[in-house]
Image 1 (cartoon, rainbow, N blue to C red):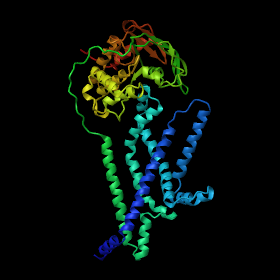
Image 2: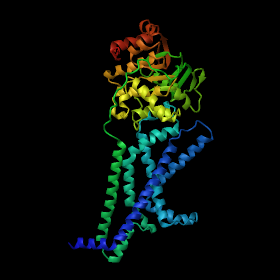
Image 3: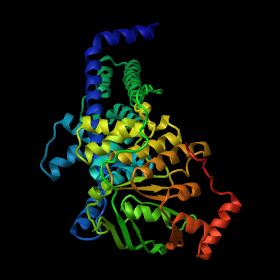
Image 4: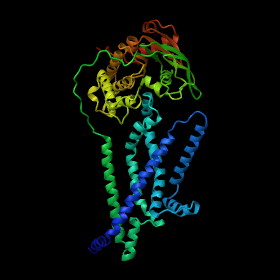
Length: 505
C-alpha cells in the first residue's frame, strides 16, 4: 500500500515534470520519425531511377547512389548515442555549428531513422510484384508517375507495421539523448529521483508512461492499417443496358512491322532476327513451345524489354530507338498473362488512371470511357471491386477494358488465358473474339488453338527464337510445311496439353 501511495504522491507533486518530459519525447519521436521516413522514401526513389546506358548522367547517378548507400550503412551500423555525441559536440568543432539541444536531438533521430527507413521502404518496394511496374509502363506511364501513383501507395500499406515499430522504438530511444542534455521524459525522471531520493518509484512511473505512449501509438497505427486495407466486400452496380456486340473503337487499328528483331539475355539468344508484318485491323496469333521467344517478342514490341537490334515500325515510324517510349506505349496496349492490375486501385480507377495521367483526359471523360469498355467486357457491375476481390477471368476482362480505354492502335496479348481455370477461359476468349470482329489490330501469343483457328487472320509458329512458319489458320493447322510445326501440332493433340474452349455464343 505504501508503494502505491508513494507513486500517487509523486504523480500529484511532479506531474508537470512527467507531462513536459512525455511531450518532448513524443515531439522528438514523431517529428524525427516523419522526417526520417521522408528521407528514406527519397533514398529509395533515387535508387529506383533507371540508369542511362552511358554518359555523365550515368556516372553522376552511380555516385549519388553510392553516397546514399554509404549513409545508410554508416548510420545503421553505429549506435544512436555515438551519433548524438558526434552531431552535438562535433558540429561546432568541424563546421562551427552550435545546435540547440532540442534541434540536435531532432537531427539525431531524423538521420538515424532515415537510414533504417530506407531499408524498410526498399523491402516494401521489392515485395511488390514486378508486373505492377510493367502494367504502368505498358500504359505509357513514366518512372515518376509509376512511383507516385502505383509503387508508393502500395509500399505505404506494406511497410506500415515496420514503420510503426520504428516510431515505437524512437519513443523509447529518446532516452539516449540525455547524453547531450536533452530534457525528455527519462531526464525528467532522473530529476525527480535527485529531488526525492527515491530511485524505484519514479522509474515505475516512467515505465507506465512509456507503455501508455507506445500502446496508444500502436492502436492508432492498427486503425490506420485497417483504413488502408479498405472494405472487405464491395457493392455490385445494377446492370442497366445490354453489352454492345461490336465495340466502337476510338481509332482504326494500326499497322505493325517488325524487322530483324534480336534480343539476348547474357549469352542466351532469345530472338534471332524476327521479321513479320501485321496489317491494320488484322489478328495475328503466335504459337510455339515454351521458351521459343513469344513473350519476349511482345515485350520488345511494347519496349518493356529493349531490343538489341532491329526495327519496330508502327504506321511506318520506328520505335525501337526511342529514348522516351511512354507516348509509343500508350498506342501499343498490352494484356498480360498475370493481369497486372494495380492492387491499390479499384476496377474503375484501374481503367481511368492511364487516361488521366498519360493521355490528359478529364476524370469525367475518363470515367465515361472506362465504363463503356467495362460494360463491353461484362465488368461494369464490379467498378467498386479491387483486384484481390475478383476471379482470374474477371481480372483479365478488366485488363482488356483497361487496355481498350487507352484508345490504342494495337493490342498485344501475352497468353491471356494461361493463368485461368478452364471454366474461365471461355469468357475471356469471347471478349477477344468481339475485339477481333470490331477491327482491332491484335497480336496474340496463345496456347488456345481454338482461338487461333477461329479468330486469327494469320498464325505464326515460333521455334528457337525465329519464325519457323506462318500462314492462314487453314494452311498452318491443316497443311503445315515445316517439320517442327508438324511435330508441335502433333504433340499438342497427343498430349491434350491445350484446352480447346467451347465456342462462345
